[in-house]
Image (cartoon, rainbow, N blue to C red; front, side, top):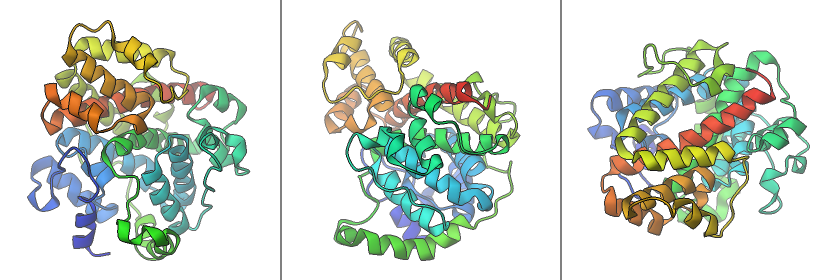
Length: 352
């Protein structure tokens, strides 16, 4: 796939925001895009962050340091990325990382047999896939010990939390499939071709750790990510994303909305709230203004049920927060706060 085609792919299928085109990128965005082009690809799950350069740098840093570095372990990380994406009902990421797992020569997690299956680790005989699906729930993690040694904890836990974050952003901003509608009838064939061509090149990149563009000097990862300390580049990358998401959230979201979301997430045990609205209406009822309530609905759905964020939810939010930066900031903050919660029970399950 040529660089030009990749950059066109980077723009297709994105909803609600306009990513910075590679040809028009400047400053930090241009530097991050250049490294992405050399070591991975300029892809929409990352470019949707480009309205806020620091967020783009943070999510790229975690992608690079936890997931891209060390091609020898890429097959395992692709299987894990697919399993986590299944647990979060993220069809775009499931499709992409099933293809990448093929490219890496590893096992491709089977599709869940029902809508309830993603949160049933017993649905897979492979211990890594079962563990990846179990990361969505502290109860399930207690039942499925991690199937890899201590030395792999920073990269594997880092990959797991990366995709818990990415899945939420992708469910909000991207169409369910990365493929053009015209070829979706032949997904399996197209997927194999992509895996054996473009994918092969992507999974073999040998990037040196600790060199991600935009790593924030002196940033300290939140305590929930203590398990990353054994791999300083992964810890610094998580700290960079944590800092960027916190600054974006504080600049955009009212304090009452952030407080409500944190209180809700402190009680969350990984359960999906389902399709009803009663819980959501009750949660936001005490907020003082329509502006706060619109923001809270977007934030809570992004964190707990991102597949439910639709044009009506986004439209209500944009009535009060019109800029692309506002929408990216609110959803990134919510996605990272949910990821922090998941990181805490990963540490409790072993590896801190």
